Image (cartoon, rainbow, N blue to C red):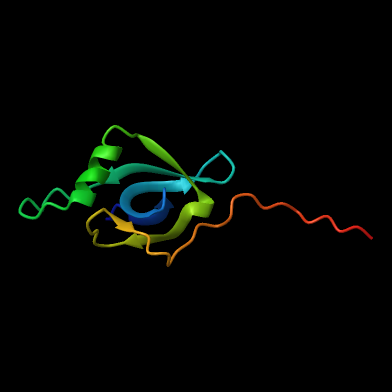
Length: 108
């Protein structure tokens, strides 16, 4: 019997670091994007309410599929046990890859 895979995706979104869990992740047909489907939110913890977890759950509650740019992804892990989805403040430790890379034209 095979277990259903669970993925932890960490990416930068509007200056914050998002950590989400999903059952499906794959390379998109749209160049430069990763598709994420079937979000997982840990609803077992009823005693402690994490505002960032609730914010994520509300943000993704009606989303079927997300397209995340490859350059904003920090890490993707296949995990056995999932944790709590959360948003962390980016304390200038992680910077997104530059978007506008212009070639340098050298004149001979």
